[in-house]
Amino acid sequence: MSEKISIQETLPHQINTSPELRINDLIDGRFAVLPKPQHLITHRERESKEYSVPIAMTGLSHVYLAQDIRTQDDVAVKLHHNNDELSLARQNRERVMAQKLVHANIIPMVATGVHIFEDGQESPYIATRYAPEGDLRRERVVNEESAYRVIQFMGEAALALDYLHKNGIVHRDVKPANIVHDKEHAYLGDFGTADVIHLQNDTEPLIHTPLSEEVSRVDQMQQNTRVGVLIGTPAYMSPQRAQGEAATPEDDVFAWGASAFQELANQSAFKHKTENTIGMLPYFGAGKPISPDHVPAFVPKDVVDTVYAAIAEQPEDRPRIDELARLAVAA
Image (cartoon, rainbow, N blue to C red; front, side, top):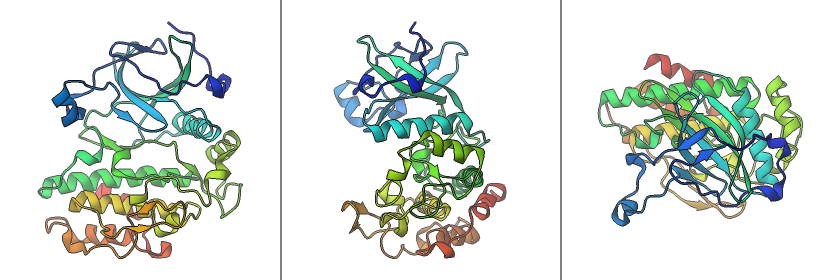
């Protein structure tokens, strides 16, 4: 069993660049890696009968399903594997968020630490509760019951965002993949791109709370990820974010609306793809959204109107996040 070390003691050159674990391997001597759930095995993997172990992989991390040997509970363990300075800053930011954010609709953090591989390489990790039903990408609205299920989950995600905003934090990557559920309730997750709410080109928090001030202290690199750099997922970005402007709560509202529309209509609200002027990345949120008539008739009209208003082009025309949160109660 490896000895725990704090993330602050981890040096950039020690971070493993390609963490690969096998079934039954222990992460930090505590979390036993489990097989990938059947519903996450891809068609290609089934054909080749070669299943990858991580349940999710990005350029920054691998996520494993594991069992906490102390409690026997299933957890999702995110192992970070980038060693550049900006990635380390994002890891520190996410660690602070995971430790400090406590809300009924935010995925609970179980532990943070550093895993030491057999070759001595180290990877910081964050373990959170595992949501067996997965994220909202698996949900399909086919009748009134499934529609109200999605409305409830999106409303609960809005409750989590309202809590974030009141604590001086903007998520910056709201999308169906970052909203998980356990059949009964939804939970917002993945705070690696979250930031303090601030004035344009300002390094000081706009809303001073213990959390926003701590994030500002921990993440000395965050001012370099604010203006002129696209952070998040282009398909859910507001026009303002796509142009490289600093993120605001109204941008989270737009991303929420784009996500809710996609889930209720089973298709994106935006059909036109243009080239973004910052980094020339494709931006799917450009142009006028498709008609709300694409949302099935069994979805209440007031819900459709609220969701459609959330993807208004101008921030001042979008509803407040607490208005969207009321959908959870209505559902």
